[in-house]
Image (cartoon, rainbow, N blue to C red; front, top):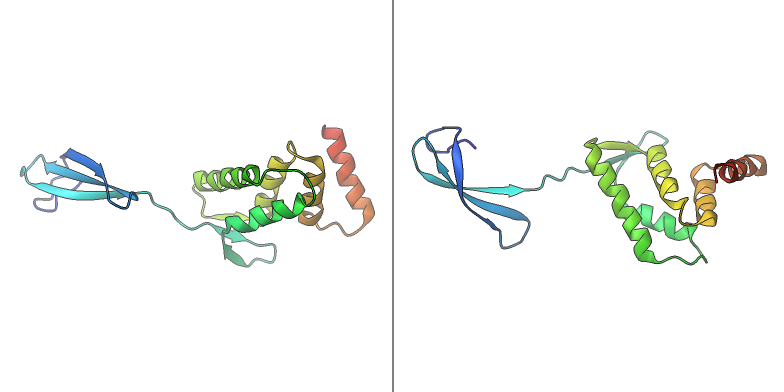
Length: 151
């Protein structure tokens, strides 16, 4: 950390504590060059994730859209909403951990299907049918056959 007084790059942390809002850490530092003390704040950098849609348009990532699409796939099926919320959080964290700022709806849909597959076969097929936009019964049946072969 660069000293604001003398510009020296070396400092040591004298004291650390959480800020009052809990969103950052306040650190008291002492410059190794001039021995003066200064305060820094450390926060988690959260950059927005952009979703690239099939038509090329871009939107800010909205976890509620993923959650709502899974809730629709589980319509009249038994599932605890906390499980779907956990899946949504896992997907969001996976995207954040890639450090890429853009993700396609195709990749996002694949991630959701991967999570739904072991939980509920019917919900998986429902989600896949909307995600893949099947135009006829034949393509829908091929997806079901492919799913059954993978089991």
